[in-house]
Amino acid sequence: MERILEAKRLKKYYPIRKIGRRSYVKAVDNISFSVEKGEILGILGESGCGKTTLGRVITRLETENGGDIFFLGNNISGINYRKMKNFRQKMQVIFQNPYDSFDPRMTIIKSLETPMKLLNIGQSKKNRIEIIRDAMEKAKLTPAYDYLERYPHELSGGQLQRISMLRSMLLKPSFLVADECVSMLDASVRAEVLNMLLQFRSELETSILFITHDISVAKYMCDRIMVIYAGKVMEIADAKELISNPMHPYTKALISYSPTISPQKERERFTIAGEVVTPIDPPPGCRFASRCPFAKGICRTEEPEMKEISPGHFVACHLID
Ligand code: SF4
Image (tube, rainbow, N blue to C red):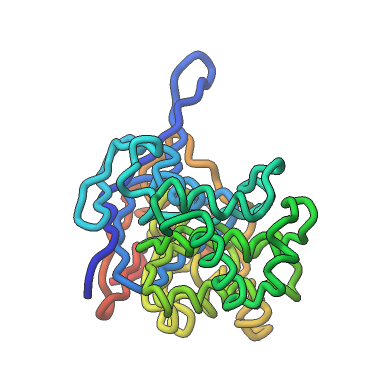
């Protein structure tokens, strides 16, 4: 297997002022993981758990406060997005709201052709337009001319998100971060967008960091899933293993919330109260302790270590021996 991306002990802290002293929101706190060629790694958690921050740090939209990121064997830690020129083509990002990722004054054809030109893809404008038309036909965005001369606001969210994916894939990236890419779309178009992403993965062997709060979408899309809570990894495993044999109480709760995955009995058994805590100067111990129905003394004093309970299945919980 070829390793495309590796994050080691990654940290992103935001300073805030709190009653006259400086505190930190530890949005990403000592997170390590890797992504292999052609793999889809899901980052799963509720809103506010740090998953979007993690995606922004990986794509260099934000710089980390500690740790290392290796991309295609190069250490890109400390490099910001502007300085990522050599890697920009190879690492792409798809945002939640497609309208935010297009210039409203540019036609679709210009939005697609400009990055190709900047990255020297295609011999001429005519050639680039041919490439775009072919890709649109293949992605069943037809007839292509019906889309290309339009402006973003003239398209639906689902159409524009598919074009956003197409724009990324025209650059043949090795790695893609898809951040809640279907959460704003109608259920009727979600499957189309997800299938398009799967098709690109199999054609280009692109590795994908798939950020979502929806475990049923993660189950459909991902090879492995990493569950995070308040800036920390709780559990990571092969997707099928994680869903059929969740070990961490937080993972169990997420699964039990999903009506499509969990039967009614499980839903009742693993309900947790409250919302994700904001990790401002978090106390020692497990970040999930304030919501965990199984919390005991040690959970509030000692941070649980990540343990491998079966090959590739890691859990951070004091309940796991
Ligand atoms: Fe719950 Fe303790 Fe496990 Fe944290 S370490 S999930 S608080 S049992």
